[in-house]
Each structure stands twice: as C-alpha cells, then as structure tokens.
Length: 181
Image 1: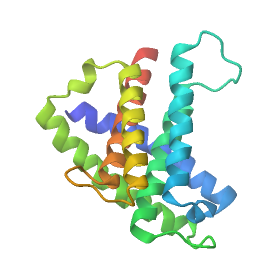
Image 2 (image 1 turned 90 degrees about the horizontal axis):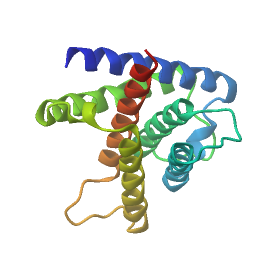
Image 3 (image 1 turned 45 degrees about the vertical axis):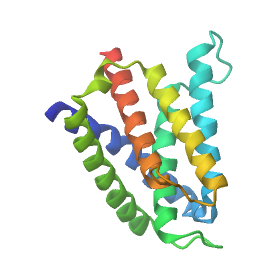
C-alpha cells in the first residue's frame, strides 16, 4: 500500500498544480457554482471519458487523463462548496483555496487508505472503463440526492460520493500512468 500512497500523492500534485494555475488565471469564479452545476460539469467529463473509451475516432485532441484530472478538481470544488456554501461573487484568493483543497484531499486520501486496506487494493485488478462506470453511477446517485433536496434515508451523503469519485479517478490515473511505462 506504500506505493499506492506515493502514487496517489503524485497524481494529486499534478491536479493541485493545475488547480492553483487556474486560480491564478480565473480566480475563484467557481465559487458561484451551485452543487448541481458542479455535478453536471463532472458528469460531462465522465461522459466524455466513456465516449473516448467506446469510440475509435476522436475529434478533440485531449485524452482521458485531462478529463480525470478535471473530475478530481471539480469534486474538490464541490466538497469546498458543501462546507462553505455558494457565494454571489468570488471570495477566495489562491492561498485560501489551496488550503481548503489540501484539507479536502487529506480527508479523501484517508478514506481511500481505510477502504484500500479493507478491500485489499481490489481496484488494481479493475479496468479503467469500470472505474469510469463507477464514477458515472456515483454521479447519478448524487443527482438523485440533489433532486431529493440532499436528503437520504439510508445512504451516504453527497460528500461521500464526491470523495469516492475522486478516489476512482485517481485510481484510473494511476492505471493509465502504469500502462505508459
């Protein structure tokens, strides 16, 4: 599991660097997005990945990697929005946003470590396409919870689903990185 932790950190370092650079370019404009809007952005990325996996022809020269990174960063934005709420105007500077990003990913990584221990790193034997499908399933669950005004009877909340999507996307990126070696 030591390799998993290091690989996880390497993926997050790339995602975080992109997040910080985009914060420099755009500021925290994403802070105005309501959760369903973030969920839809993640859905678009997951659908595109599924399309790339199923279609032989690509018309846009971007592959799965950038889309999985987008899923991770949008999920982290959603977790921040869950905690801080939506605002009418951007209100975070890059340093504040990066601190919140780090807090949310630390919790998400700990969840991964706990589940990874219990499941015996089963994800290592999964296909990237299966991880994509699991992300899409989690998205449909989140959409249903959002449609239920955030209420669940017996299920995990929205935050747990976003965390699982982050972890599935990281696993996919680890797989994709290993297949290039």
